[in-house]
Length: 306
Image (cartoon, rainbow, N blue to C red; front, side):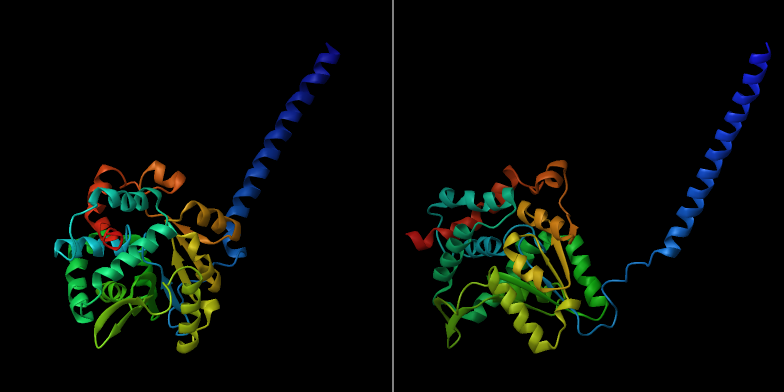
């Protein structure tokens, strides 16, 4: 019994000490969690209000707008009988592929550009600019990502300039920028003589490294500090542009850009909905409706091959 009496107080004492230790640990953790925000510097507000040496550069297709601006423009031109319905089915899949994959295919985009050039050849620049305003209302206005639009507005509210940077024709890009209240747009320039399109490009499409060079040149002309600027894109093709600035954002990123953004610890925003979109980067709107929606636009690709 003596031995049993000796053991019992020890068990009680050990239990009490355990309780005391647990309570002390919990209290220390609670105090630590309360003190942590004061000990850790807060992330600086961004964009910085009044920083006139900072600006923002936004890719267009699948970053600001769902789908490709060039295809939506093609839909509008088809409606206005700029070309016929021949080979409609043959090219419809290209717009569907873009919507399903959410990434740019260089060959598809090259075909689209070449076809667009052949379609507008002989037309006046002023005519296409006017039509572009109508097409924006018909096919583009409802396809602007609200989340990306809010990011652009935050820069504008901070007093910074905001440009679109896109491989789409500069006339289309300027219409979209103007309608969104942005500063302006950098885009692919089609040659014109006396206000009439010749069917040729000035230089090359504003794509990939060319975008980075355009941003670099504009920043130099505007007196911007690129380390204080931001850039936004969905495509790995725009890594050169994103790498130029101090604040790169991956928006609705394709798989390659998502991996790169994570490796570089870039900020990421995905405004697409649905489990599948979040996991593999496929727009949730894709499917039969997307195919139907993009079908007419793809007709533009056929003219060059006829």
